[in-house]
Image (tube, rainbow, N blue to C red; front, side, top):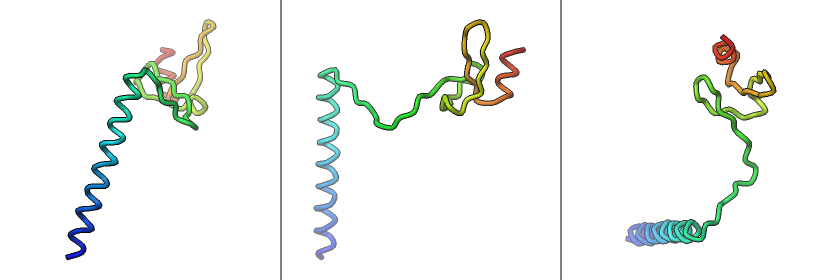
Length: 81
């Protein structure tokens, strides 16, 4: 019997928290604020296959004053060909 009440209360609490987060997100979006994620890493897009790669782990090709980032040596070779 008490398990049923516990589950109902838990469901209500989870539902209220979800509603609170949704409303806070709507208000934040309406005010034009942008949320920043701490500890995020910069990603770059591979021009051949479109995969996003962590910049520090990407294969780099410098040509003509530009820097291109690739997910693998295979994509780098395809780009160079």
